[in-house]
Image: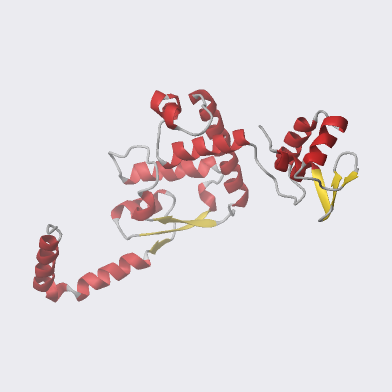
Length: 238
């Protein structure tokens, strides 16, 4: 990584006052000249390995105590973010057009996969250490939309049960740690609760509210049908 004279100054010197700066390596104090000329001459004369010193300082942090990632780390993060957020296959990073137009340094599919695996392992460990030994499970169709099911063609009780069981085992949490289940009062959710010795099942408040609203609007079906037809017509107008 290349550093400008200004970068070198702020990485390897500490300002004592507007007119004085001290070398962090040999503690020699200099008065600033025109720009950073005096400091650069000091590097060339006393510290010929100043580029390596600057790189090490950049990796480990700066005088403000802020850790600064190097360019390679930033590039890897952007590759991982792109792959995950856009649901791209790992091999996409090797496509000619992607490499031609991406601002990041090229990366191989194998290397990207290694970083993804490492990130997954780290996140899994963090969740496992913060997850309580006693908790409940909420079965919500809204969040299930974002969940990778094992068999999306068969969303029955057994498939969802297997998904929950596999997730619990991933974080070293047996079914005995699950105290209750929250969800819609449907046959699938009830079946999951019965599979584990009739876990306490708590009906979802939003589901009960929806049922109450449906009951309240029962005698207004004709008006609702007219509103639906009107909105459908308006949606076609450009």
